[in-house]
Image 1 (tube, helix red, strand yellow):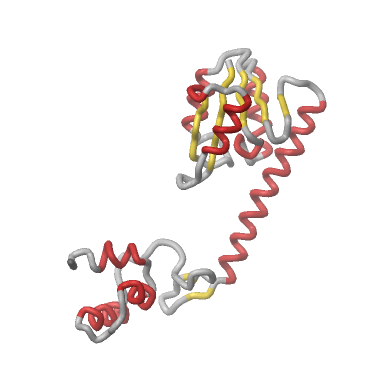
Image 2 (tube, one colour; image 1 turned 30 degrees about the horizontal axis):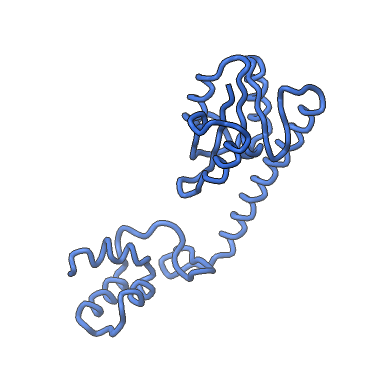
Length: 201
């Protein structure tokens, strides 16, 4: 039996392209397992576990690329070996690797696994450096260099200064619209409407 495994790390990411490639390879849509979970380990991947539980000796799992399967060299190697013991093979379309082949395919798999992991580590390092360069506002929150707004979740409580500005707005002392008010307070529009102005008509 031919199965497909499509994975992304975040909920907002889309699996359409991966599913299209898997179907073009010959995988039935009903046999494509979709998951939105980290590629670092297999531990939290409940969909993947369900797929493996269904597979039998002679079955083949198809992934669009190695990094959709795993981004960790050790985890990849260990998982492939475990699948081979069960008679299950894996195909990676981008890298043109089929684990049913012997010899060179395992060497290539190891190389690409290492490259995928290095790319992930490089990305994390770049993100860490980017955060270190961000400026902070008077409340100590990091400010996005692109939007000029605080990074991350909005605060649960407003500061004294923010409350003063909000009261001036409600009293008509600030002649600005709600978008400008959100920028002035340093909050998002959704936070402004949901938490601050939710009782206003």
